[in-house]
Amino acid sequence: MFSVGTERFGSFRLKTSLTLPSRIVVPAVVIFDLLSLICAMEISRRAYAGELFDAVAYGGLALVAGLAFVFCGRGWGLYRFQCLLEPQGRLGKIAAAAVLGALTVCVFLFLLKTGADYSRGSLVLFAFSSPFFVAGERLLVALGLSRAIEADIIRGKRVVLVGDSAELGRFTTDEVFHFGLDEIGRFELLLPAERDDLTPQDTQTVLQAIQFGRAHKAAEYALIMPWSRDGALKHVIELLRSSPRAIRLYPDHSTRAVLLRKRESDFDPYLSVEVHSEPLSLPEQLAKRTLDIVLSIVALLLLFPVMVAAAILIKLDSPGPVIFRQTRWGFDDREFKIWKFRTMSVMEDGSKITQAVRDDSRVTAVGRVLRRTSVDELPQLINVLRGEMSIVGPRPHAVAHDKQYGQEIDEYALRRHVKPGLTGLAQVLGLRGETKTSEQMKMRIQKDLLYINDWSFWLDIKIIVQTVLVIANHEAY
Image (cartoon, rainbow, N blue to C red; front, side, top):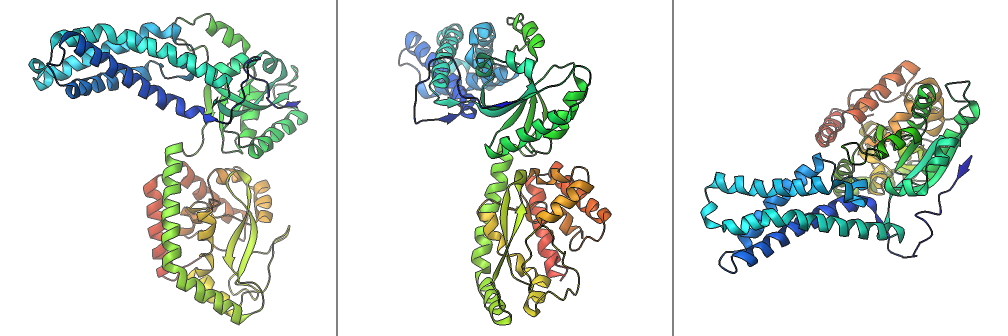
């Protein structure tokens, strides 16, 4: 059974055109915490020492205390979304982190031997007042955050809920709210008690959830299932892993009930376990995308005369379009049209595509030169600039070949957990061109998955340099 999440957070729902993602909440609260400590320091300075001491210097000490507070707060769970919504149970830890921040200032002054330059009375007053300032600020943040979520100004993480119908029935809108989620749909599984794996109908439901998540750009798949159903859980996770989105297991009803009774303890009543993470974090995605944009623009500017010359030669050599476009599957199985200079007399783009082989009779005279020098791949810089491809990544295959090898090779679909690339690790290691057997394709897939698992900014740079060297040595693919 499938339903779309619409009514949320009770009856109050103020319409607004301003919508902000929940990922901005924690950075914003960090800033508020620092500002509250700066205010505490400034008021303490004015109350005890007046204008006898430099306000800027005291502001610097407040930042030292603030950084110590943030460091402790991260370790103590004070920046979890649930704690930000309900700080009442953690006020003791908030106060303790503020006191530790004040003590850090004292240690800092002692090590620099500059304590005599500051008013001890002001610092003592700051140590006593800072916990009240931060606690009050956190209570105001909680009130404002709740109102912002109710008014749809702050939207939680877009998730698709997948799980047992009974457990989903107990997963209320209030709990969705406190988990910091924005439910865009839920898919209910039957999970009959007499079997520990999935029925064919349940398998189909999970596949529908994946398609729905792709279509609606879900950030995560949330599993709401009995933790005792090991076999079913394992099967659902295995199916969901075909998507690059994170998969997170949330506590079942029994576990939530136990943890909610322990709210004052160190147990988090809204814990969750990430059972599958995205290959690249948000900062890594930004770094990779920045590299793609910069290199594709520079390459297009430098190679524009070469591309114009290639287009003219293609037009003079044989009838047909200059650019050959073919359907490929990209990141998360999204279809796009890959661009190449036309090098063949045919324009195959269907359910049956014949791979190019060495000395292929379908290759034109100009096309043979373009393929040997890899100039035919240059229009894919446009695909990179449009965000459909990356400079480095697994090379995209024709859809017909994706379907064929997807059935023959385990984990083949995992190569689409990142954007396809103009070049890749498999290609610079010589695994390029025609693949006559499934074993050859398996070797290529192994290198693609190795690239995804070991990705780093510098690995991309290394592969780009190796690609240039390969082309320079006339070993283009």
